[in-house]
Length: 64
Image (cartoon, rainbow, N blue to C red; front, side):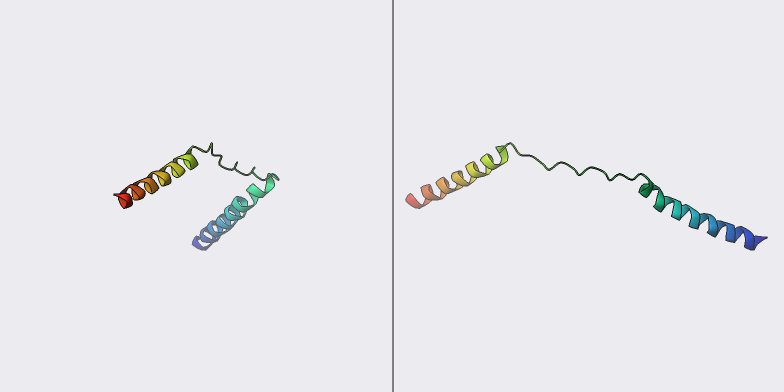
């Protein structure tokens, strides 16, 4: 009796694994790719401004 309960548990686990693997494949559609991130250029402008400020600081230090 105990052997049949264990074998039924193993059988149920195998069926559950097969069911879990095969169900996403049954939909037949792949999900749409995520849209690429867009930038309005504000981050680029801030980076350029920061570099220009550092260049101005270094030039001011070297001149004085």
